Length: 199
Image (tube, rainbow, N blue to C red; front, side):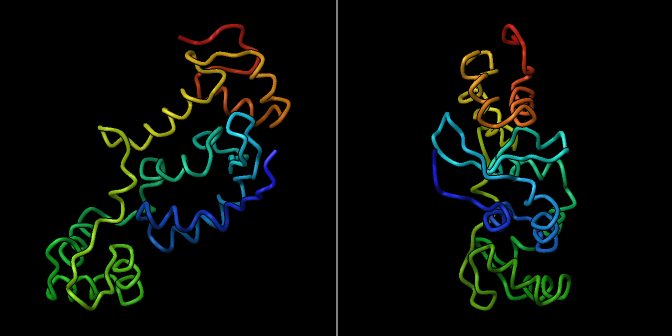
């Protein structure tokens, strides 16, 4: 059993910033959702994971690193509009301009401007090109935010059809409890007590 305790309230902010979540939404997620990701030992990996333990069915069975990429689909209001992203691209992207920066500063205000500059790898003053902050979070060839979690489900989930294992299912129920195990089974399209995998 791993002794490395993890705290989702502390770990969520860098993940959310990397995913380009707005600062006010980072604060909301940290207050409302992060406390519901509990440090839980995963016998499959031998490490502590931050597993969701709340009532929201969209997050059930997911760890923090899987839930954050899904926010774009589940909570689009957490992100800047596409027009604002285009303005940020003009201000901090490959060819930044002072005119674009002035327009962006006027549009979103000074604190948000410097926060956005930092996310793009810019100081907001020099015209050094930056990089779009959400580029590293895109997964798989279709860019689907669910593809990472689906891949993890198929690799580690004893309820998934490719890794069906009743003994491991019992170990998961014993280690994590019935509620968490139900969420993991549901993520694979199955349920605790199923007698065969869902095809």
